[in-house]
Image (cartoon, rainbow, N blue to C red; front, side, top):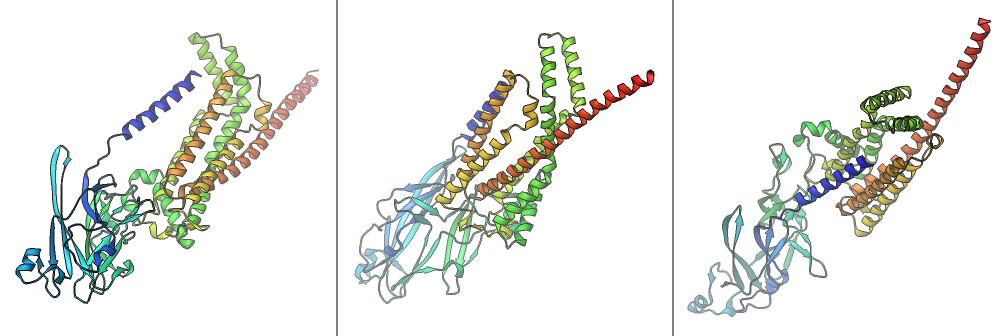
Amino acid sequence: MKKINKILLLVVLLATTLMLTSCKKADTSPIFPFYDLDVNNLLVDEIDESKKLESLSFYKLLATGGLDKITLSEADGITYLLNGDDTAYTKDELVANGKTVADAVAKNYTYTIKYDYKVKKETISYNKDFTITQIEKGNHNKTTKYIDYLKFDDKGKVKANGIILTNSYLFEGKNIDFNVINGTSVDLIDTDNLTFTGFPVGDELIKNKKYINHKTFDLNANDEAGNEFDFQIRLQATATPLSRNTSSFWNWIFLQTPIAFLMSLLGKIFFNSFAVAILFTTIIVRTLAWPIYAKTNDMSMKMSVAQPEIDRLQKKYAARKDPESQQKMQMEMMQLYKKHNINMFGCLLPFLQMPIFFAMFEVVKRITIPGGQFYASVHNTKFLGTDLASGGTVAKIIFTALVGITMFALQKISQVKPSYAKNTQGKPNPQAQQTEQTMKMVSFFMIFMMIMTAYVTPGLALSYYWIIGNFYSILQTLINKRINENKYKKLQEEKLYGASRQIIDAKVSKKGDK
């Protein structure tokens, strides 16, 4: 019991340490500012003298990936444009040239963004002018462009931010609207018609065997009509893709890279289906690891059979604490292990399954990140009407519930004692009962942790993998229980035959002596 308490205390201390180290203050330094507005406010019936552009908001993109709104009341400068003239005039300059604001067909709002921030105790000042052009409806040659990065929900909260890449290493212009405004219309450019340059692709994303991250890129987009956009994109991925070129020696040894290759191959065979690739990879990997699982169960069976003798041995030396008696107990215990063919190194067998678990976890989580080496082979993430890479709220709840249900069923089946364990039980051992109760609590805690992890992990892929894995483990457990039952019967028959053989041999020997 004391050992168990020490182990639990160690686990709690480790968890507390991890929480404290992960609670360091987030870096809130600004990366760069940008603005958002209703694009329809850039095409107006007539140009006026107002210094305020309706619906305009400026934001600072922060190092955390969040946004900080900048408060501005009105433009710092206003200039006007005339039809057929590229010169920007102030109101006074218009008057000096015999013109008025009513003659202007476009208007420039200039906003100066200034702020200071600290990087490693060094104060850095930011100062930049942003010019936004508003067009008057009519027949003239003035045009302007606007890139809309933000999408808002009904409550006014940002639901998509196209200026930052958090789950992709492939820039395709998603969640960004490229608009061209002229005197007659506001035109949304189809991103399929745009050619993007400036964002690295393939191995250009890898430096020193690591994917680059937390970096800003200056991009250009243009189409055949001559429309051109210059803009910035921030790469701030929460996870990096998988690639052979970033794999270390340990990625190969702990099976992460081999499993990624296997899943990629299966994805290619089955029409780039991520769901089918996970299904067959799980079956293949778990089947290859079956001997480890079977050996672990075989060791458990032998320990159950030997347990009554172990208990008797421990009771025999319970009151003897002197070194000599303890040494004798250890020697007799080793004889018991030898008698029942128990190898103590077998206790380490469950740990051999851990690399497989972690490798599958990492591969399922990262193989579909766009831009990675294996992405093209598993890019079809659709499954039963939902998307394993994203998924909706309802699908997330259903998949998470299935993770919990299948995990609970697996634990219940695993905890059912086989007949040989029931047959070999002696009097209830309080310490053993306490250990069993603790293990049940740990099992329920693991179920809770898996449910929480499944729910908070983006997408449904991890939940789907766990569901498949749990069903496989349930079948595996039932089969191994049946195999162990048969092994136990055979052992008992061999014991019975051996005892009978000894009696017969003894009788024959006596007759021979006579």
